[in-house]
Length: 101
Image (cartoon, rainbow, N blue to C red; front, top):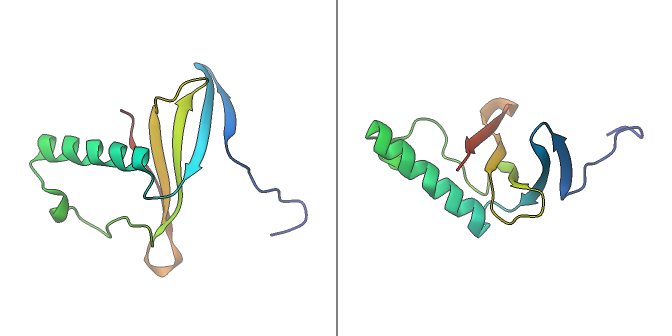
């Protein structure tokens, strides 16, 4: 990292056309994040008839998630989205935003 680069600190407030959104960094095992991921898995399984254990690719885990974020409208504790940056093979990373509830 160069001297001119600054690290982002969380929570981060972001202004959008629909208002202020609070972005929080949490661990992969955070209960709110786990709830949102479980809802997403249930939705995909119901829609496509695919059980989670048959999903293609490298399964996300605490070991390969570099960053996990939750997004909340300002002044609420009800999340509107979550997302992750995940390490893949060969030095690649993936940005994934799997769940708007």
